[in-house]
Structures are given as C-alpha cells and as structure tokens.
Amino acid sequence: MEYYTVVADSYEAAVKKAKELYGDDIRIHSRRDFTKGGGFFTRRQKRCEIICYSSPRPQAKERPASRDRDIREFEKEARTPDPATLSSKERLDTEIYRENEKAVVLLDLNHIADPLRSRLLEAFPPDKDPGLELSDRLLHAVAIDYEHQVHPRHFVAFIGPTGSGKTTTLAKAAYVYASQGRHVAIITLDTYRVGAYEQVKAFGDALSIPVLKAGAEDELIAAAELFQDKDIVFVDTMGTSPKDKELTLRLTSMLSLLGPDRTDLIMTIPATMKEEDMLEQHSVYSRFGKPSLAVTKLDETETIGNVISFAYRVSSPIIFLTDGQKVPEDIEKASSSALLDHLKGMGLVMRNSESQLRKER
Image (cartoon, rainbow, N blue to C red):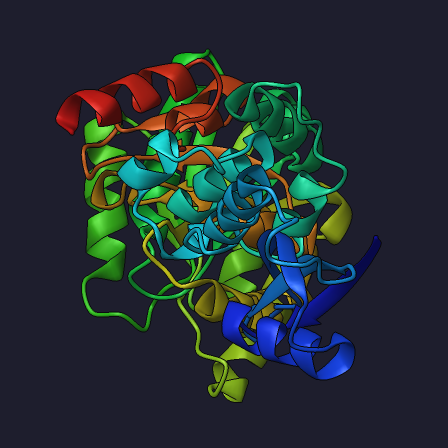
C-alpha cells in the first residue's frame, strides 16, 4: 500500500487533485487544515493537506466488512470541519482541537499578529499547557523598560499623536516620581492646541508640580536652565501628523536642544489603535530617537495583543500602562504580570477560561 500527500486550497480541491494524480480509487487517510504566509500587506492563506493511499481493488466477496468501516471512518475524519471556521466554544470540545491549535485560538483572541505570532508558535511543544507556554514565550519576546522606570534621565519627553492621552499620561507619570521623593517639573512645548498649556498647568497646580511653557527654542533653553536643579523634567510635546513636515521639523529641532544623551523618549500608544496606524505614527516619531511605549486607554479594550505585536515589530520596550482618565491614579509601571492581566487566557487564566466557556454551553 502506497501513501501520498496532496496539498491544495481546500479539502475538495485536494481530493480532486489526488484523483487526477493517482486515480479514482484513491482513499483518504487523514486531513489537516492550516494557514500559511501572512504579513503586513498580505493575508494568511488557508490550505488543506490530505494523506491518501491506493491499493489493488479486491473482489467484492473478499473485501471484509471491517475494511468498509475503516474506510468510512477515515473519510469521516477527513471531512471534519476546518478549525478556523469553528467558534471558540466549539474548538474547546472538538476532538481535533490539539494543543497547538489551542495556542492559535489564544493568539486570535488577543489579535496577536506576525512576526510575533510566528515566533510564539515556532516548534510549539504539544505536551505543554498552551496558556502557560505562550505566556512564557511572550514575556521573553516583548521587552519591558525596567531600566528607565527606575533610573529616568534628566528630561523625559512624551511624544505621540493628538488624542493619544499624552498630556494626562505625563501628569500621572510626574506624580508617580514626585510621590517617590523625586523633585520634578514640567515643560510644555504644545502652544498650538487650544487649551493645551491650561490643561497641563491645572494638572501641575493640583499635584504641586511647577509648569513652564516654551513655544520657541530660546524659551525652552531658559526653562531648562530654571529647572536644572530638578531630578526629572517632564516635557509635553505637540501632536504631529505624518503629513505635517514643518511641525515635525520644529519638534525635532526643539528636542535636540535637550540633548539625546540626557533625554528619555516615551511614545503614547492607545490600546484601541490599529497596528498599521501605530506603524505610521512610529515612522514619524522614531526620527527623534528610539522611544519606549506608554500604552494608554486600556479601559476601552479587552486585550493589548495588537500593541504587543507592534512593540515586538519595532523593537520598542513598554514602560507604562494607563487605564483611565483619573490623574494620578490610573497608571502603573509595565511589568510581566501587568501585561498578562490585559491578555485573554494567558498564564493560569487559561484553565479558568476553558471551564467558563464549557459552562456557558
């Protein structure tokens, strides 16, 4: 008996191809559905692999009934649904839901995309708990900026698009360090947005943190000199657009006055933003230097898999997480446990998620 492997776009196409290659007497042994490819500009392609066999056709009177039953079982197995078409509840109970397929479901639930997705699934061990194994792999793949959490430079500049929560996140971070006994101050460069200075000044007054406005290079130099005795000077910037080259150049010029060796850059990224939009914004702000990421608006989404995928793609560490508008409460320094808390089914939560889904059925 000879076995053959045939791959096509669907089960029906694979069977048709097998019959064309090996004849109408071909029998299906097993079936495997999978996807391939996928990236920033391409979608993942569904594929079906069947293993079939051929053997001399026996006489009808000599073919035992058990053989007919075996063939029917093989063909029944080959007609099982593609796991990608099943709901999460159905996948948990189906017999073909293997451990690596559980890992794929978790990645889908958390919107984790390539290239991080491929790294997490590479040589995935079948004998490990998917939630725990993915958690471990993810924490090894995505960096957390512990160094600058503990030892920030003299200037900490917050950059990011308008509406990303930049000013409120800066105020929260300033309070975190002030409450630790650090002497902090705030300089705002945003003289373009109406009410921008008044907003950050109100935060500063409420938190007993001095605030200065600098709309030009000489004003920034003067403000920096006034605050030279401070441990940390937080710098609020104006939001820019990829199309606003003049404003981008102006911001580049002003930030260069602070000195790259004395300045930490933190880019605010809303957890609700699509990864392609994050990449477009990053293309603008990465020209200022390599930023760490402050993930904002966590209260408006159920998972941060898209942000983690983005952080891995651009090799930027995560430094802060914020989950609300309250200043100074709604902020925490990024950590392994904090990241896993904002992912579905990771770590020990995986078993609880499976049990809950079964109860719901």
